[in-house]
Length: 294
Image 1 (tube, one colour):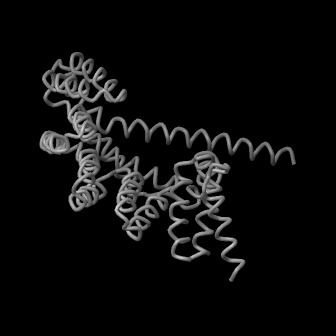
Image 2 (cartoon, rainbow, N blue to C red; image 1 turned 90 degrees about the vertical axis):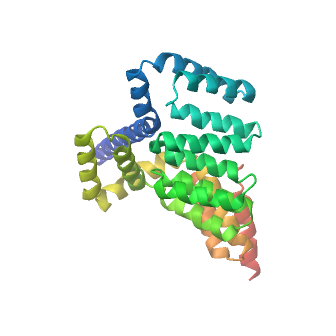
């Protein structure tokens, strides 16, 4: 009995450690996707110090909702380094936040011409701007972003929220469910490999190895083990954001009187976030009352 307990505990510790390593790798790749090549370019041209200093100040202004100051300082950043693409993207966000939608779009179009590696970020932000005044162009931008986005889950969620706000609930739920289907360790692992291939174009040997890993795929047995022992237990526990997505899909089915499907998603929501603040509790109670009356 003690021996079995020891093995179980050791397995969980090892699995947890490996999961955290994967998360760190994903995080590094995600940050490096927009920063590493651009930072390398700025260092080589001697522009890193001045541009980065102004960029940091501008980002702080943006965070504090000081949009005019952010715009001025991001523009100053770009004068020091015209190839600082992340500055263009944040400048576009500042323009959009201050209501200057056309300038935001023009800035994002400019960054697409300068560096195709920022394409999915530019298109996602473009969609966010367009949805304020042109739903058709917003939809096109979302679709373009999804076609090239290495982290599809967030893109699907964002696209789903867009459809939800314009009352295209069927399309909204299709995209949110696609995002939820990617809520597993295998999806995160595959996304990290694809992102690495896209990011590290200057390292052919790295690209070759990442492509080899991607082609090899993963063992269902191993990934299911990670999902059940670590991913579902640690990552999805008390995750209010994912819980909200499950609840949203459940609410869609509730409105359509599809009570069995609604109950399934409300229960998944509660599993992710077992809190009285989770609306899924009230929604599930409504479903149960409906089923009792049948």
